[in-house]
Structures are given as C-alpha cells and as structure tokens.
Length: 373
Image (cartoon, rainbow, N blue to C red; front, side, top):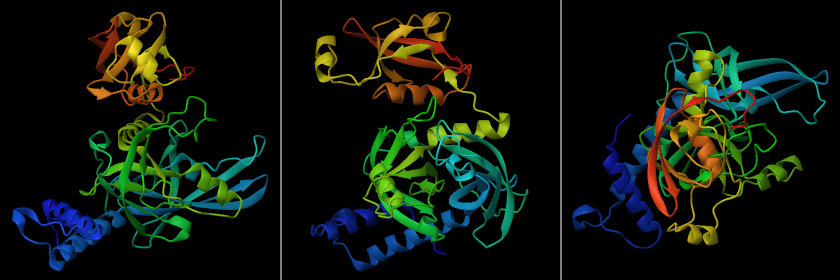
C-alpha cells in the first residue's frame, strides 16, 4: 500500500472539511483545493485503517449463567505480538451479572486474528475499576501489534479512528473527532473504587466494539473503546438500539499503565496521595471567593495521617490545580491522574492556598487495597 505523509493527511482533512462546509478552503501557499488532494487523504486513511485492522482481534467468550450456556463478543488489540498479549475491556471477558446473586462460571475465551486464525485465550488478569483486561494467545502467533500513544496530547477536535466489531460486523472502522476530555458519566458507579476519566468522541462504536482501539492519525492507541452513551445502552436493553453520537473510551494514560501492571504483577499497583476531596466540582462562586481566575481543581477536605500528602505539607482547604503540569478539572480527574502513577513516583502538585499558587513535590505510596483512591 502507498504511504502518505502525515502533513498531507492533515492538510487534506482540512480541505475536506472546508469543502463540506462550502468554504472552498485553499491549500497551503494559496493554491485551490483539488479532487486529487482529497483522494490523497482517502488513500492515507485507508492505509491507516489497514495497519490498525491487522492488529485488532475479535473476542468470543462462552460462559454459563445460572447453568445456562451463553456467549458474548467484543474486540481487543495486540500490544505485544511476541508474547501474545491482547488488551480488551474487563466486561468483555468477565460477563456482567444480570442480578447480584447470578452465578457466572466456566468462562472460556477465544481470539480470532485479522487473518482468520482462531486461538484459545488465557485471561491473564483484569481490573474492573477502569474496565481493562489482558488476555494471552500462544506466543508468536500474532503478526502485528499496535503502539501506545499519548492521550494527554489530545485536544477537542483531534481526529481519531475507532476499530472494532460492532453488532458482529467484524473489522469495522469509523472516523471521528475527540469531543471532550476527563468525562465522568456514572457507568462505573457500581464498581467499588471505580475510576472515570473518559475520552468522549463521535467515532461510531456499538455493542461488540468494546475493547477495541481508538487510534490517532499516526496509528497509535490513544484510548480503549468502552461504552456508548447510557441512553443508547438503555435502548439496547429494551430492543430499541440507537447510537446517538456519543462514545466513551478509557484514555491510554490509564489503560497502558493498568495493562502493563496486569501482565507484570497480575494486579494494578496504583499511586496514592492520601487526601480526601470534596466530591463536588468547584463552583464559579467558590472560585471567586477563593481568588481563582476560573472554576477548576479539587478541594482537599482531609489529609490522612502518615500519607505522602501529609509529608509534603498539603493542607486541608488547599485546591489541587495541577499534577506534573496537567490541569486537574475536578476530583474524579485527580483520582484518575494519581492512579496512573506507580508507587515511588515523584510528582509535582500545583496548589491554590490563601489566594496564591504554590508547588510541592510528593513521593507517592501504593494505594491500599481497602482505599477508594
């Protein structure tokens, strides 16, 4: 296949959008847009989709529910072809219960590679707190793998490609844009200690897309497709399935750390700060009274004794604005950001105290098993 430069791809995207809006946007240097440039964009996008599809897999899970045989499907992607490591969602390989007392058992997973070969898969480990799991197929059987990207570099409007198996339609691709960052939508509210810091995008995903890659225009995984809007999920349960333009993905910053920990340790070793925060967003009125230029950050309501935060001098009433230069949009974003670090990592916190900004350095501990984050 022909490979097209990224600059040409992005230029062509701009031209395509301009034409779609009737703007007839000129190319660089004042040259008018041409059909050939749009064809270049199409070729480049086809090449990108082909590369990603080669490392994307279909996952089928057979299990029993109250003694009855059932099956579910989802998507995954290879991150280590040599070792056969595949990343997917926890809910793909650990089927959710229809009711609290339901008995789920005899779970057996199979992975179908892009070339049609099928292999039994071992479920290495899973983390329900962000809905990520790792499965392993026989070593050396996968031919392609996908690199991780930097989800922190994303901004609203960034082009992304979703790949998966929606509604059983294997190898589907969909182009969209990042619509929002650091979203909390309540789908993990029933999971003790669940973390919600989703990417919102409008690339089409649906039932069966779960666990599939969301990639940037360089083919790097920036998210793991996890859910459609709660409204769409409600309709699906009642036979009125309808995707309504809102898709959710776990950002690569969280998914990569969790996946790598699951492979290395069989569990997730999360960073721990040792504060409790107000579980409400900073209001405009509170921001004005505190001297903040705008409402953001997480308000510290308690410093737990003997924790990294206490040792670093963080105080009750401080507002945590940034972690290592990354803005904290709210209390859930703070929890998720700290959880993406490992015990022993040193981070810089930017605080707001007495209407002034200050910075402290904290060496994180390991999140205790009983802690909520």
